[in-house]
Length: 178
Image 1 (cartoon, one colour):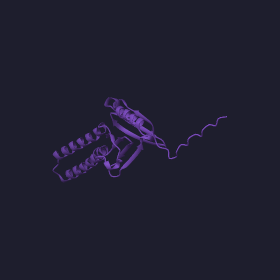
Image 2: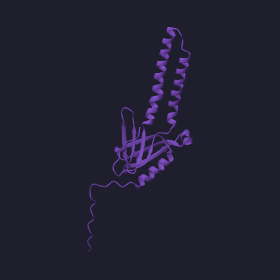
Image 3: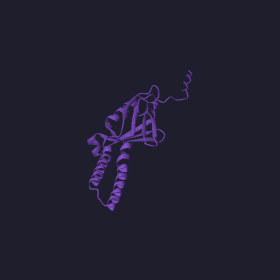
Image 4: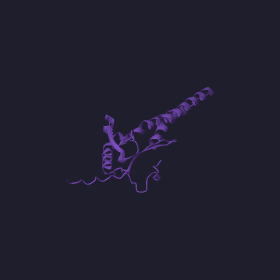
């Protein structure tokens, strides 16, 4: 599912649009392949007796349920997760049936940290934790090219326009000479 452009402001430009690293899809794809292989094997060894067919139907039902729950659902969830960095904010969206979207304005980000396991370092991925003013935070798990994303985020934060104060600053009164 593509990220909807109507979420963005008129002048807002997308700098990066990412999904979690492909390593998150490996286990669900393997589960789906093993489920399919088991289903085909059971079909080939189809017993001729009525009791055997009922038993095979029960095993096939359990295999399909397992494949959908542990293979298809995580794969669809991975596909529907978006990490979007624009020149104004960070958008994190996930969910299949119910969608959750979190927006963090760049001018409110006060810290971002990257953590990587050994496997993450070998694959170039990592988890980026972003903290902002007001106890808000976002965790971007399995970000591909994590170090480059962190560098890009740093550059965006440095060039983000400062939050404008609603109150105008008063000019100091001129000093009196004695």
